[in-house]
Length: 540
Image: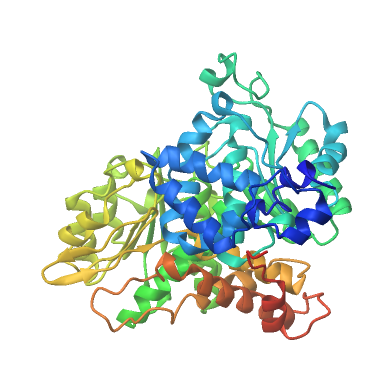
């Protein structure tokens, strides 16, 4: 490769940082300005351009231009401004670009687009997208269940791209070793089907045998082509997400962020709260408000931890209640998902069943000490609900973690004020410090990015053959001890600004547990060294 081939390859391009010797060798003399810049100079120049953009959406478009032309510069800059850039390149601004993807389409960003109508093209598609790169990590979505905005068909590829950006920025996973994928299985969104500019299949979303056969062929092909692959599922619909994960998690190293990732970080936040109160997890009562893939996945993770702390499965389920669009879930409902069924209750256990569609009534009846919202039901956690939680326990855990911001069940400021500072709060979107009665309350973000990058790094470094519940538990426990819990107003989760340090700690915990369970296949036996050796740094 020479000259423009190199300048057009984002994994190789250095732009004005190519030295004179490199320019001579690669045929770049005369097609770059004469001055050779350092990466520090490039980053400062790029950041100043970024600051000139009039709004967040324009800032994201600008950063994507850098991403598409020079991965090293992009991640060097991202590492310098990770707190500032994270909501720009991913959530919540990414929702705007997903919704307008077909109309703004410019570059494929080295993504793979799999068409459910052409399973015969899976191998060729993966080969074309990967080129000669050794792929270790795939993030794949079918974009049916993008949190907060729903089904966006092939436009959801941006979710896979954005997720992998965080993997690299937070945990240092080599961007040349990753591949974003979207499976276009159609869409149920009429505005896309009726839009002549929509770039996906103009057909209703497919379900059933044809869908699952395609998924199986994709998994088999990807595993054969990339023998050290870690497969990450993202934003699949509630009817498919758990089914897919359950099918493959005992045979390949795989992970569903919506089901497992959110559960890990919420469990870590619960541990942070209990570290302050000294209470036991097995004494808590958990109310899930929003029983989709994320809500049920979080509840399952906390349930598994209660079992690991000594309760039987049935005893642990008695500590859980789940609400969805129907209200409190009961076992005779015909539309329960497999993930919801274990948490459904019996009508006979409640006197006023008809009132159990109302959140406030449920809170007063079942008396939860932990309330987690994944409903996207904006404003559902009212002042009365928060006050009722405080009647149940001196220090309630209240996590409104829906996103984007407009979908929050309550803001952090509202929960702190209505609970008179008693509640432990984490939100699903970045929240500023809340000042209340002379105390600065730092609000932890129940951000999966605190977990999944380090989890992936630990899996890749150890070359673990499976991701187990014990490894997931180790990841959740590793979040503790990273904040000063004696400080008034301390967050229950580490602030996102420390995500790089958090990711290393998570990676080491996961890799060491993989080794303890006999699942690590890496030649390096020192797991801390294996993690450090694998970490990629954005430098020329």
